[in-house]
Length: 123
Image (tube, rainbow, N blue to C red; front, side, top):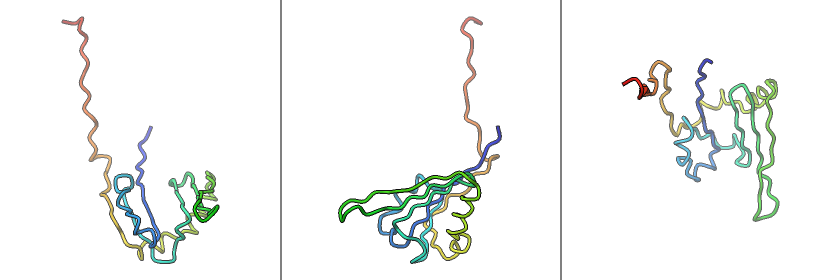
């Protein structure tokens, strides 16, 4: 089975910057802050490559209680529509990069060393 390189990215709205996004640095390979007004802080979108998307919206049930409501989809046309509406290709150059870990090439990865098992009856 071929290996698939997966990189994770975090994109946050300007207003969420004060919530210490660095706490996610070990989870995401890269992170960006979008220009003010591009994203609502009540919406979360998780794109899983070309495979699927999860869209969540925070709904205020009262002044003290809120909950996320959302859906997941796995059809290519729907994922592409979400990707297009996010317009990340045009927004990324105007976004501020918080961090970006270097990409690891497959040939740079060395396989884990596994000790050879010896049969105790052979001695």
